[in-house]
Image 1 (cartoon, rainbow, N blue to C red):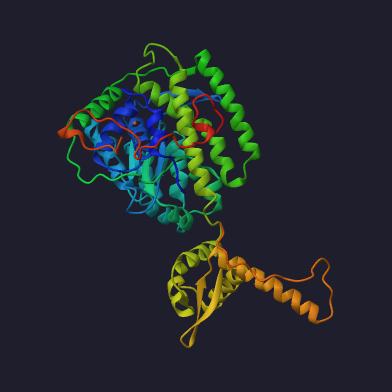
Image 2 (cartoon, one colour):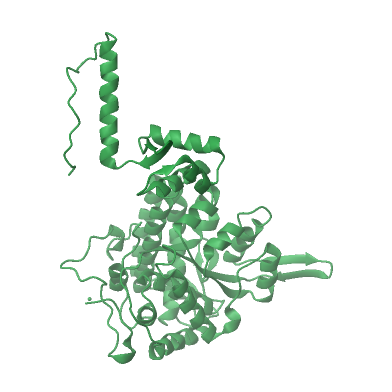
Length: 470
């Protein structure tokens, strides 16, 4: 799963805008994928924005809170660092806006009643997914869903009812595909909970050998966020400019077609992409100060174009993630075993200890993979062992098995139509400079692709600013 490249991110963000400033600062502090900084920067913006920031959508007000999930490899892609940069910036604006990961549904309700406008940073979002899958903890996800939609959140106690009618919960966290596979089921993936997250899938493309604090750029971003935090926004966004309306209509038609053609794994994410894009466009409007604080204002075309592009990245990432996850426990065990066998032959004992499964279930799994032609049994000393077949080995085994079957039939007097002889299987092989550096010791940071290329890499149509299909 490759995700979204630094090159795509760079070319989407105009110089001088909030997200570009955020990227310039964050990229000087870590070599995390630049898409992570887009997601984290939006989460920080959503947290500090006034709770009255809203846009009218399908007969109700849609507020500016966001859930962002950074997805990548554990220990390599710097998800935690990206989350911490955003958390630090929010804290510098208003530390009371930060919450803590919920330990129970009741605790989350209490926290949201006491502090209705907050961001919960989850450096290990996988731990939250694991916890809330356990019996008795599923209600946390239900409460979070209500909070995402704006509340109300309430608890009835002996002393009376405690309630918050307006909740703005933003979540920013990082996790791996393996955690998503292990701790979410088909219902969570295809229904409302995971579909509320904007999924930012990327991989680290460059390396920063040394990093020193870049206070100058940090102050620029913090001051921008503080300005947004102090805004008064009693009205909200209502509709679009004429140009933005045309863009929204065209893209909406593409979304409708995408939902009708998509399978169950991705249809929900495509359907919610419009809501996600509208929230992002709303926040960009606020960040770039294009709204009229004394009246309702329309979403304009530049904000909507960028929001649609970011929503497209979310859908592309979700598509890659969901279609690479195993849906059942058997499928997860199957994938786990195949990964375990990569590069080395293992005995049944090794496999059973690794999978921690009963012998009968291990045998069922081994036989299933053998029938698929993915593994082969071979002696290892006095014990049978199993190895993962390469693609070429699989093809050779299939050819030998087919030949053997035909020869056995011929020996039994059965004539196979169209087959005169069977050849031996072939042995032939089948056939904008450098990464960002800390700018403390030099001129202003210029962001360029991590790897210079003679021509830009091919990207999906959704990245083209003139194409609004997801």
